[in-house]
Amino acid sequence: MTESPLWHPFTQHALQPESIHISHAQGSYLYDKDGRQIIDAISSWWVNIHGHNHPKITAAIQAQAEKLDQVIFAGFTHAPAEQLAEKLIALTPNHLTRVFLSDSGSTAVEVALKMALGYWAHKNQPRTIIVALENAYHGDTFGAMSVGGRSVFNAPYEPFLFNVHHLPFPAKNHEHRTIENFEKLLREQGDNIVALIVEPLVLGAAGMLMYTPQLLAQLHALCQKYGVIFIADEVMTGWGRTGTRFACDQAQITPDILCTSKGLTSGSLPLAATLASEEIYQAFFSTDRAKTFFHSSSYTGNPLACAAACAAFDIWDTEPVTQRIKTLSDNLAAQIPRLSSRPDIENVRQTGCILAMDVRNAHHGYLSDIAPKLYRFFLSQGVLLRPLGNTIYILPPYCTTNEDIHVIINTIIGGCDALGNGALERAA
Ligand SMILES: *Cc1c(COP(=O)(O)O)cnc(C)c1O
Image 1 (cartoon, rainbow, N blue to C red):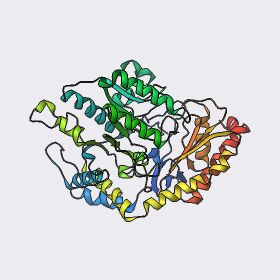
Image 2 (cartoon, rainbow, N blue to C red):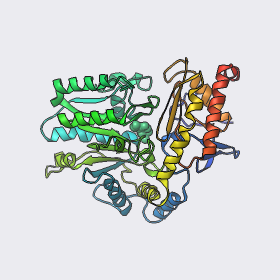
Image 3 (cartoon, rainbow, N blue to C red):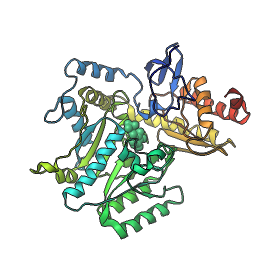
Image 4 (cartoon, protein in one colour):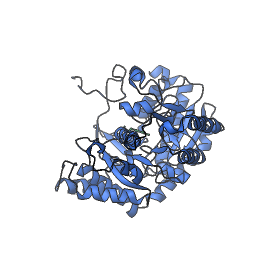
């Protein structure tokens, strides 16, 4: 067999030479080329919400492909993009009035940062300090890496990342540290702070670290008090993942800039949107061409992706999505006692449709060697789960049945048992 020339993301090929060949998918299942079924318990890296190959999304992409595949988006527009933008701004009436399209979560964040920096520059009050949360993850491009926590993900690039003030993570019972740190910075250097960027309620790649809507509301209130732009990176938390349409809804706040991507097309095609307030837009709106927002990618506003996003939106209106989210989060909650009672599992936590737990006494951090062992074990049982270090989490499509949740939990428990009795060591 010849080796594949593909270089995969977040993959150490020396340790994982073979990739699983997927031929098709349906609902919450992936099928490999031999027809083996795998439960997609992480929504194919957090993107899928309505289930794979939803017929309405597939039909919308097909219909759009017959009309218009792609058109330059500078100076041109089209129905799917216009409809999508209308739907997006209707979610935050009178607050976020402008929609900038791009292709991924990372670019949505880059756009947000450039909007925030440009806002101050065009107002002739240039500012230099960007604030983010410790351990945050905002993507893998340079701006997104810079606002993210420093970790093994970006160590080789660290000298090239711009400086960011990281607030301590608002861990349970330590929230005051985060607030005090931010208040001190605002008091001393408030007029030099560009923006605060946060993953609202759940820090995903950091290991599904969760904090309260109260704290989120407090951070937002401080930004308002000191006139600092509040950027919500809802790339992972958006589209019902935390129980509400956006995580910010639980804190009853509207950010000045909102980044969305992953669930936007329900995981069918790459697309992102950065929503901005009218005030931010107006800082660029000028007869001075130098104040143009100079950002684009070739595929900005791709019609197929926009049509897919519109179809994903319609599913919210025509199917009981809210009920599915409620049922799924109740089903996940029902599993908590079983998991919490185990001596080898700790910090069982849930926000909406995300359930996470840590394997106790294990080596912490992303490079924890139990992660690949558990990953292989789970796959051998037909379940796709991708532990982040010693954190095991479930983040499934909303159509996942309670039966499948049981299978997933049984598989996790089986993996922990095998870890405990050394079976994974022998298998590795
Ligand atoms: C995944 C993620 C990103 C990056 O999205 P990509 O589409 O992978 O570029 C940014 N922010 C958050 C919070 C994410 O979870």
